[in-house]
Length: 333
Image (cartoon, rainbow, N blue to C red; front, side, top):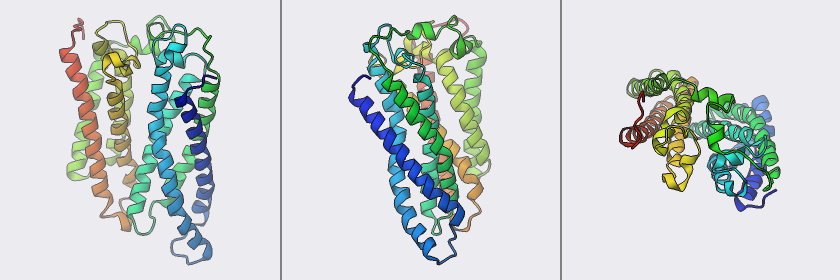
């Protein structure tokens, strides 16, 4: 294992988050089975007293879960010089077989933690804990992913050895590399570009419609998720080329480095925040009829939609500006 402050922080925080999530999940089982707001039993009163404290604590832990995704990527990028052949996070993540699964799990738990925080915020606005079952059900669904992330991330960091020779991003993100990366690079550039801008346009249209007339919440959520996948694909396929100003450099991680102004952090941050808030609109949609939330959820969903659209708009603006004013000019792009 490589001793690094960020690695130690990630391992410790991941363990604490897992333990807290498991504890809250056990409590969630009682909520799902025994919660009855109309009851004045001793058990119900005990559940009501404990739920606010547990929800508050788990909120802080899950907020750090959001931050830990970027800390994980930053750590993988910052220690790349320790491995022969590595030039960015790509090389570090390929040191062993746990790197990319850990990253994927962190993205999944990021999205789930964000949705839980939205549900918890809405639940705290109601006077009768209207979403308590929904948020603890989501927590139970999230617990296996959080636990798996802790195990896989721990296996990844504990398996790092500085004498390992790894691969650079140029060899991985090339059409000759094989696997998912080469499949993405083999996609025709013009259709990918059209799909990217079309997905953004549809998301903006659906979001504007919901913001103005309050209809299509599920559509906003679906398009936000699709736009996230399309945007990640587009970064690898063509967007990254304009930042590197190199026609063959498709790495989605090098844009996180200083020579490119760390532009990857705001790009990915905006994309993730826009996706989570867009998905949150759909997650809240089934509960608009609850009596204690009738006047609260429409305004909250409207704010989430506005945040999502602003994030996607800034992301789109940054990307389009780079494409238009980059020194790289490619025929067919």
